[in-house]
Length: 176
Image (tube, rainbow, N blue to C red; front, side, top):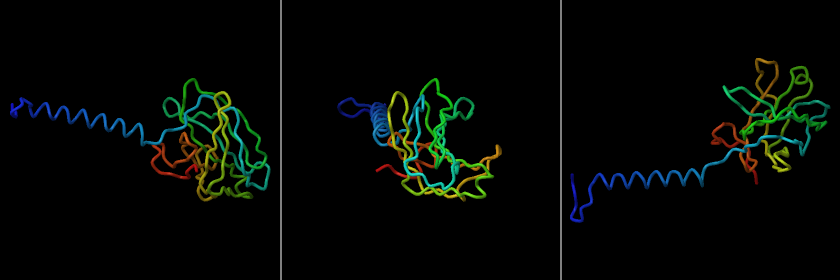
């Protein structure tokens, strides 16, 4: 083993350096990474600015992925009518996704037209409220799914910002 005059080994210095780097990385992740919004129950969902000209233009749903990537819906609200439908709750805290969806028969006459900065207010877990900020979305952004709906999904951060990816690295719309 290599030792300097004070008896410090090279291996000891390497161990100390690794510990410092690990602590630094943990602090970095704690302070500088975006956190997902996690909830158990969605009590209400309200579209702040409706854009559809027909009663059931498109829906905005809040959902989550459970075991084996199965999707579960907390609830949804219909643009124009702003009627909220409570669907279910989770047993533990779950990361929230926002899914804009539309039936093909409606899509033929009413095109999705969400403007950047449009907001959806979520009320969850005992009355807590959060404004979720949506990016500009048009009909062309939605994809026809196997189950027959056109959809577009976003991931929600704890501050109400939305992201295109589950790891919250590709910002869709920031909260002010």
